Length: 381
Image (cartoon, rainbow, N blue to C red; front, side, top):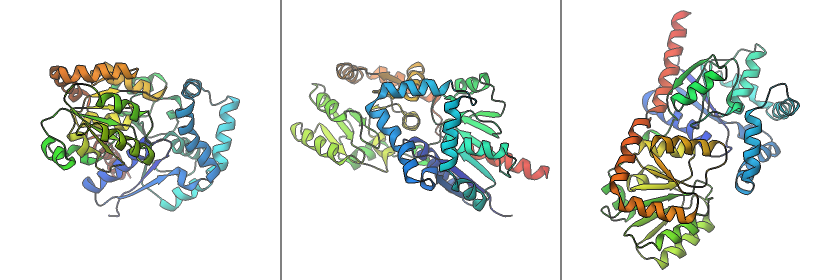
């Protein structure tokens, strides 16, 4: 039998969509090594000007004008396909994604999984024009679903929780909807013990440990927060991640010199699961992938600075689930860090509640669902 060929399509507008696609490919290498997995970031096959407009401008708007992003998020969530702005947007996308159809035809996959709404929209249009297209699934990468994810002719949707599934049905989606969770890397199910992880990092395994994550781009004013937390009287050690932001890393290193043994600055890491394993709780922005990773690691969260729209709704889910607290200001963060350090029972309660909503096997569940469909399809032929 010829190997199954799966195309996983993402867009590098933020890191989460790409990380979900990479997680699916990594899981396939473990559970379906005979499959041919191809990950395509759509931004790699579009003109540079469109890439800057679509992906890079998203980051800038989110960072520099969050209120504008909140407005755009709400407005686009209620869009109609017949609106003039939507027609213009689709026209611009069509002009700049001319290589997309040729790429799909050259790959000739047996199935496609989209971890971003743009390739799903292009494929929906392709199917509507009756061009040969394999079954297409959409993997929603947040604990909410925005109107841009809604497309006709999809084989199905993979979503984070029951509420997202209910909201899709309420919006008129008739495709198969499965609650799988959000795909994360297989390594999060095989993390080391706290003692091993802490020793690797040069931390004391018995000392309370706080992990501060700023995200891959190193945004969020983490250096100010790290300095304030390092000055707290509680006995603790802080691991602060700067991502790929070299200037931020240097700033954190200067702060660490003022507080010997209190603050460990780190740059970008490919083994975040080992850092998480050493921590008692994390301070983080509530991205869909980061939140799913913390849930899988049973690592309680204090969420800060959520992006208006998707991250605010992620934060709502985490707060309602009892998996996180939210700090709206630096003083609030100081208070909640001090509270958790002084009330280990509260941390244990959060961990218990996290177990009820964590879905560490999401990637494996998604691939199993695709395999089941393809097997049923082959038997029907």
